[in-house]
Amino acid sequence: MKHLLSLYLALLFSVSAPLAFAAHDHSHADQPAAPDAAWLAKAKVDYPLKTCVVSGEEIGGSMGEGIDYVYHQKGKPDRLVRFCCKDCRKDFDREPAQYLKLIDEAVARAKKN
Image (cartoon, rainbow, N blue to C red; front, side, top):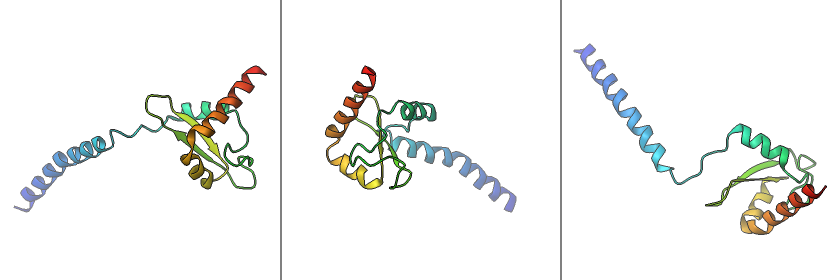
C-alpha cells in the first residue's frame, strides 16, 4: 500500500508541476522578455555616454559600479539607459522622454565624428 501511495504521489506531481509552471508563465505574458546577453553587450559598447544621463556623474565613478536599465516602450525597440546610481533611475522614470532625447542627441553627435 505504501508503494502504491508513493507511485500515486509521484504521478500527481509529474502531471501537476508542468501545469503550475505553464500557468505561471502565462501570467506574465504582458511583460517584455529580458534581453539576451549578446544584445546587452552590444548595447553597452554602442552606448554614447560615459556619464549618467540624469546627474552627469561618471558611470562607474564615485557613485559605484553604475546601473544598466533596459527601457521598454510598447511598439518600439528596447533601449539601454545607464545610470550612476539607483536614485537616478527613479528620476528617469518620471520623465523618460526628456532623458531619451539626450541619449539620442549624443548618438547623433557620435555619428558625426
